[in-house]
Each structure stands twice: as C-alpha cells, then as structure tokens.
Amino acid sequence: MSSTTTPMICKDLDGDDRWLSIHKRFVQECKEKDPDVMFIGDCILESLQFTDFWNSHFVPMHCLNFSIRNDRIQNVLWRLQNGELENVRPKAVVLHVGTNNICDSAEEVADGLLELVATIRSKLPEVYIIIPTLLPRGNQPNALRDKNAAVNRLLKERCIGKDKVQTVCVDGGLIQSDGSISHHDMFDYLNLTNVGCKKVFEPVWDLLHQILTENEKERDLTPSE
Amino acid sequence: MSSTTTPMICKDLDGDDRWLSIHKRFVQECKEKDPDVMFIGDCILESLQFTDFWNSHFVPMHCLNFSIRNDRIQNVLWRLQNGELENVRPKAVVLHVGTNNICDSAEEVADGLLELVATIRSKLPEVYIIIPTLLPRGNQPNALRDKNAAVNRLLKERCIGKDKVQTVCVDGGLIQSDGSISHHDMFDYLNLTNVGCKKVFEPVWDLLHQILTENEKERDLTPSE
Figure 1 (cartoon, each protein chain N blue to C red):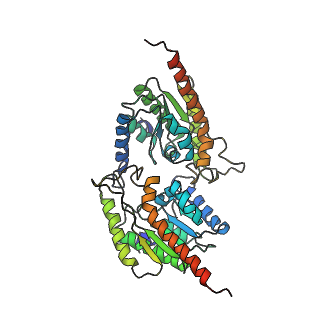
Figure 2 (tube, one colour):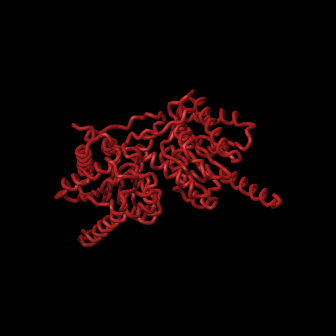
Figure 3 (cartoon, rainbow over the protein chains, first blue to last red):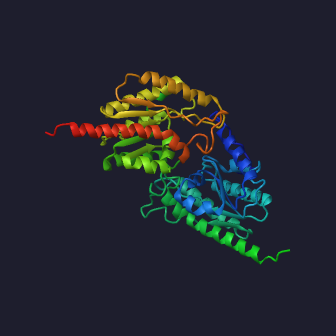
C-alpha cells in the first residue's frame, strides 16, 4: 500500500496543534452549515478564499472551503475519513491536492487522488466530484512541473467513464511563451493571485454553475408527492 | 555564533527553486521601484498583502512587501545581505520574522532579530525600523505562544535607547477571554484574516503615518539650497 493511499494525521511538528484545531473546526462547521459546494484540499484552494474572485463568484454558491496549507493527499484522506464529510449533503466537491506530495511519483499521486475519489463517493454517493488539474509551479520549467503534468495525464485517463467525476484542465494561460510563470499570476510561483485565480478557476466556476443549475431544474421537474 | 545570527540561503528542498526566484524578483524590484516603506519578513506579512486592509491602508503609502512564507530569521538575514536593501531609500522598514524559528530559544530569536536590525541599520543609516511584536499562535494556549511572548519581552528591553528602532505591541485583542484564538482573526491560528489584520496592523499604520508625515514636515522646513 503506497503512502499516498494510507490516511495519515498531520503530525504536530510545530507544537501548537494548529492542524488538528483546523480539522476540528471543519468537522464542527459540517454540523452547523449546509453547503452546496465543498472545496477540499491544500494551499492552492486555501489561498483561493482570500481573493476577490472567491468572494464574487464562489461565496454566492454556498461553498465551504476545507483546505489546509501544506496538506498532502494522505492528510486530506485522513480528514475525510474522520468527519469532514459527515452531516453535509453538498451537490459538488472540488478537490485539489497532490502538488505537496513532493517525494511521491506521478503514479502514486494519481493513486492517492483516486483513493480520495473513492472515499468521497462512499460518503456521498450522489455528489459531483470536480478535480481541477494540478497547476504548474516554479518560475522556470522544472521537474515538479513535469510530474504534475504526468499526474494530470494519468488522472484524466483513469477518470474516464467514472460517473459524476470530472477533471477540469485549468493550467491554460499560466505558462508564458518563454516558459516562465509570472508573479502576477502566482505570487510565490505556487499559489495564485487574484488575477491567476480568475484564469484558473473560471472553468471550475462554469462547471459548478452548470451542475447547480441542472440540479435545480431536475428538482423542479420531479413531481411533488 | 547562533544559527539565528548566521545568514542562510533557503535550500530548495522541493526542486522548483521558488525561494531563490522570489528573492531575485525582490532584488529586481529594488532597481525599478521607489518605496517609502518596506515590509520584510515571513508568512504573517505575506498574507497581509492579500487583505482589504493592505489595499486600503498600506498601498497608498508606497510600500514594497518582501515576505516569504516559511522564512526564518537566518533566511531573511541572507536576503538582506544579498541585494534586497540595495538601490532603495525607504523612510521606514517594518520587520516581522521569528515565529517560524520553532527550534530556536527566545534568546536566540531575539539575538537574530537584533542582528537583522544591525544589518538594516548598516545598509540604511537613516531608516526607521518598526518591529511589530511576534503574534500569539495556535487555537489554544501552547508553548510557542509563551516563547513568542518571551521574545517580545527580550526584544523590547534590548531595543530601548536604540535610535529610530521601535517595537509595536500588536497582539491586543487576539486572545479571547477563554484563552482561545478565533479563526475569524487567524484563519489557520497563525496567519491573519482581514479582520485580524485590522486589529494587528492598525497601530503599525498609525506609527508609519506619523513617521511619514513628520518626514514631510522636516523636508518642508529644510531651507532649499
């Protein structure tokens, strides 16, 4: 069994127990809130929620964002198996994690993502699972960009035919003609600025909008009992 | 010589060379821009620049923000000794770093901060150096909160009498009556939300405003040659 498919609590290496505090708060929010969309993942989604694009586009969709900065796949797996999908009935989950699995191969990262998909499916049989592709990173071309691209190819292949699971290619427009990524899009060449967020998450928003709208139509067409 | 007083490049453990790319961009910005205020430090200042409070209060002051997420004191020391204070003549520098020096004692963190102050002074003899106190961290009371408080006491003592060096106590209002810190102020119990930023950085803004205004007055009073 690979490390990416084995749930792992994030060890409190700092000594202030922040990770577990955040997880407990997420579990509590599941009991108090009624999200239509849940964002689950790592730093990329964490920084998303501090952008104007999040406020203008995603907040009106009734989203919860359960993302923790340095999380790897196995940490998210642990969180999802320990309460972060209980007491909620979202219509869609947006999943982004894997870029922090530095030491794992593309194959292992893809395996881990599919394990996450299976976990989400077992907890929420009807939910749409949307997986934005892993973003390129680093100011200049580097091995991690290549690995993330390999993960994206593997994942796309292996999600074909899965019901209500959709990968969304989101890296368009980040890599410039000279191969570099601008700090105007990614302030630290990993996480997105507001400008970068708009480029990357607009296709995700479009898909969510479509899913939520269809969902409403279906509900309206269902004869009342 | 303690590790906090020895400049240290941040090793590229990930493999995408992001840290050095960010540093090089900062050095380049020094050549292109003419800041009145420079923010230099770690994650706390990095996340500051994605808040409305930054946009409304600090952007109009002509600020540059040279902050990198996981930086420890020795990394900032390396950056300042390698170009990030060249070609600029700011009137004030705001310094916040040390909370990521998890393994160093309060004494070592204070030593490192004073080494940073000495470095800034040697590069910019006339600049005001403003040091907001290290913030408390963690949802519940913990040893790192105690250590940061100890750093703040040491630093305050050791800055007394230093010309144009001012510590600013900024932790007011973060710790609630039951000892907890709310995610409304610190989303991950380390970094500030917009609400938290307003609480913490308003006294820093007040002091900067005062310094910049006095500076203008002085300039106006100086007889033209």
